[in-house]
Image (cartoon, rainbow, N blue to C red; front, side):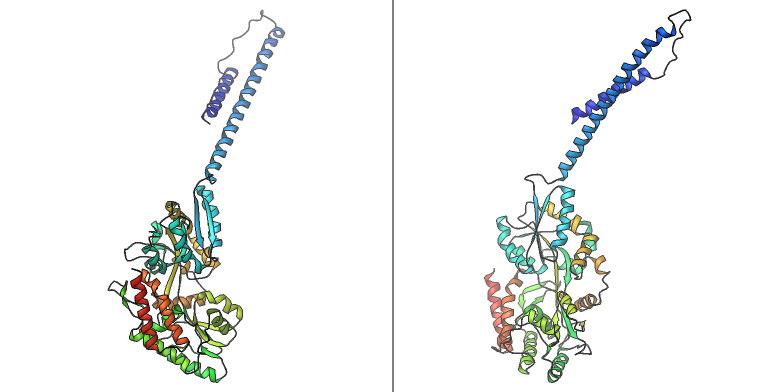
Length: 462
């Protein structure tokens, strides 16, 4: 490349010298009248002019050709620098079917900017964590994982996550979403993308006034059943996540909290008086024939019952909105009813985490800071899958009344515990609820069993 540039410079120098020789500078010397006649002197002049034009043209062509060749080579080298190098790094990202398409678009931009291949792997959200736990330590996992903030306790305890730096973008995220991804060690382990919580959704043809307490909801269920509606209030059997706001409404809890608001794993409240009271209210719905013992209602069956008018009220999240809207059933979104106090749902935050075993951590941080943490990308995520954005400028523009109602219900939400002990809770807690669903235990018996089961699981994970 350097030699070609020297050729160009030399050719230009030749051209400039020849042009100086042919151009007008000093005045020509006069020819005496008695000297060679004009016809005799004309021939040498013509002979001299012809070679000068030829040399000038040749030099110009040489310079132009050399310059063109040099420019072409420079452009080729620039393109090669931007294209992924053979054997170079590949940034791998695991995400669900909602966010993968947006990431595919970003991957092309990242490749154009940095010459790095990006591989987007789409997985079911329910498989992301379990697959990551198996793959990450072997070097087969992704560089970036999409997941929920409550995963970080287990993943950090297993040494699978690296801290995430939001850089100068930190102020653009909702503070509660950043807090959810912040571990008790004070470090941030995820870039938030969406914030979500559940709420009460009810059929406005069947329930004309928003229920504000669970006792009121139970009374409505009795009246509706007497009038021919199959279910007043229906909930998904055996599911602790959707039971949590009922539990908190009666003063129950999973983990107590320290003075600084962090969760205290030593204070497990699965058989606390409040939790037992919540299970008692739930068991009374079965005892009064308002729910079907042993029916094992799944989330899909619950949703279908609401959409076809068989259920007047359910507790669910914004992910159910599309199906409800398509069904045509009239509905409203409201805060969780109260028991002895306000019902507090869990707040979940989904975002992007970095694999501590990744050899491309710097590239991962660059991708997140420069390509994900932007107005355009965060808006694209929202447009693709309307959930409350953790990016404040997108959240502030939400006009959808249903999402605004979910945001209102989420004002009292508790961040789902992100401590590692939380992973030991779900099974025992869910088993206790299932015992009530199937009429196999009293509320106190179910609560005591859950407490013992989870205490044993936590002890075994140490």
